[in-house]
Amino acid sequence: MITALLIAWLLVVGIQLVYILFIYTRTAFYRQPQRMAVAVAEAVSAPVRSRQAAGETLTDDEAAGVTVVVCAHNELHNLTELLPLLNEQHYPTFEVLVMDDRSTDGTVAYLENDIASLDRVRFIRIANEHEHITPKKYALTIALKKATYPTVLLTDADCRPASADWLAGMVTPLSDPSRDIVLGFSPYEARPGLLNLLIRAETLFTAVQYFSLALVGRPYMGVGRNLAYRTKTFFANRGFYTHKNVLGGDDDLFINEVATARNTAICLDEATFMWSKPKESWADWRIQKRRHLNVGKHYKPGHKFRLGLLTGSHVLSWLLALAAGSVLLIKEIRQVPFTTDEWLLLLIASGVFTFRWLAFWGVVGRISYRLAHTVHWALVPLTDLMLGIYYGLAGLKTLFRRRRQRYYWR
Image (cartoon, helix red, strand yellow):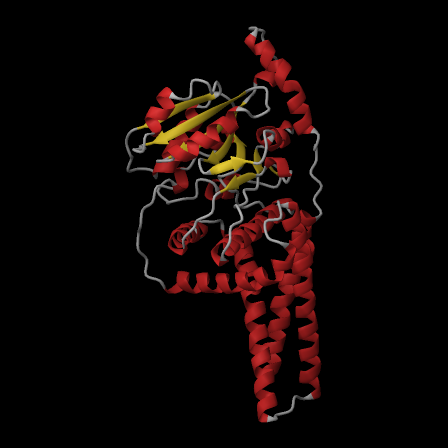
């Protein structure tokens, strides 16, 4: 039995090493192309806007701007902070389109009366909910139909751009006509407490996965807090039609359907990060995670297999390490000796697990450094264990909890 246990442990740790050494390292050592594009966009922004103001005719390239889309439901406080930041982005041609979805907190009055000074901002009011599609997907669909420009850049009201070059940097990869989608990063603000550490660790590791798999030609998701794509790609796919009644998934299910190795790019420039406010209670965070887990079951089979292999091997690496340690302790207490082959196998498995632990620390720690120090490098080993526990518990809850429908705006 101990031999089978150790062989199983070696197998799952080996799977983990394949992901860490051959997939995660793509993100760890990725060199962002066209890093000067933000500076170029900033340099051309002022003269192009001056020519627009003077009534001059712009070239097709200059006129092909970007529509920044913000969907909001009772987000008055956040909109008053976010919209001025978006309005001042360094880019020649863009608009900010706010989709006010049935807000009752004074958002309408603010948008009607207080945004005159924000020359880039306009809004559309959605007065009713529709049964054939979830509210946020309806709002986004209307936004893309009404967008002035052929490229949209999505974010949420509770987010804040890292710099005035956010927009320019995020759409730079689309200068390659073969690219239709740009995946960005949206870190959460660091605050005291275990919940916040878990949120930041899970956000970091999710980013490690979707960036790394995109770089090996298997893109499967993006985050709607920082995501750009061409409107033609949206309408060619019939928008959210195949999952219009699935709560959530306006970002990852859509990308899961349309993203390919050829049409998808990533952006790791720190100036393009979109900071977000984390959940502050365990109850709110559980609701958010439940929605995300519900969306994941609609992924393509190949994506579900790869992600299942990844998370399953992560959980089992730690679970089987605990099991091997327990067997060793019990044998020592009972003074039952290991055979020579069992000792050799135990030493090999322990050594490979230690190597996997150090490799995870080094590779994910480097990625965290690149992604705005999302998790301090010294805490990466701890978050490795935390994520193993989290994935295990989440998997058990998904398997055994009774299906109940609950509805939330997103």
